[in-house]
Amino acid sequence: MVTALDIKKKALELGADLVGIGDIRLFEGTTPQHDPKMILPKATCVIGCAFRVPRALYQTMHDQVQYLNYAQLGVRLIDEEVSEIFPLRLGAMVEDAGYDACVQRNVSNLMVKGDKSTNPEVFDTYELKYAEAVAPGKPAPDVILDVAQAARICGLGAIGDSGHVLAKELGPYVRFVFIITDMPLECDPPFEGTLCDHCGKCIASCPGHAISKEGLDTWQCAVYYKGAHETNPFMHDDFLKGSAEREKILSGEKRFDSESARTLYPQESFLPTEPMRGYMPALCGKACDYACYHHLKETGRL
Image 1 (cartoon, rainbow, N blue to C red):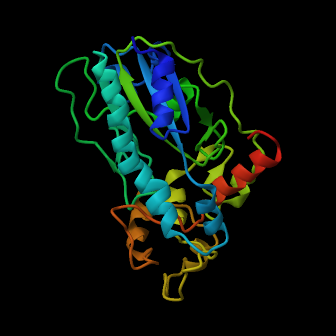
Image 2: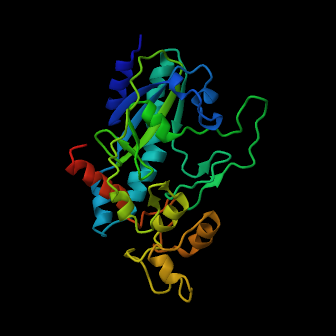
Image 3: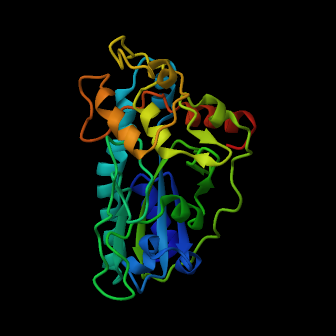
């Protein structure tokens, strides 16, 4: 019989840095568009695995010497290659034991119907606004796990003021993958509280003022993640040349919504290789995560 310990051992052997198993009952009350039981109705638990993003990829952005490797190795490679091969191999272990393994990875450029936010890591994000349920009681497709919720229930971490999950041992330098299964496994307790101590360093470090005490403004984040700030080392004089709002945008004072952000996107072309398979380099240097990680280390939370 395959046990939770067997699953965790195999996950670590396959390259995961953290593994946790969340009780499906803790998802009760979740909106159907994010509910794992809507994906696999007979599910008993969710296996969550975390992968570290190398610290040096953030350091090179902070030092303004390299940006492309974070986008390609720290984001795309983990989300699209590691997070495809890894769960298929771990899922095979579950299926070989006679159970179902519904593998899940981050869906970078899609949002469920009704979700008006965006993901700054990709060129643009699209809401599945035309999706309709095929029968009463069913959610509109696609059902997409809420990564932050699943990570907390699996005991891996919890969201901080930056709007990003802060994982135990890894802080914000992390990506996740999940498997929804009907295998009867011993579950871990959910992550209690958060590593965030509300120090405000993520708020102060964001060049686009996208983080506040009210949370993360994803459209504001996306514009400045893509480089519309004066500290962008690739900034050139032709960017927004002649625009009356140029200085206001460069300083981060301009507020963006989905329409104004999308209008600006085509002009945010600072590197000849972007967008690379749809992923954008983080020309803000992920300053919020960098400041958060070093604060967590300095205060002994990591």
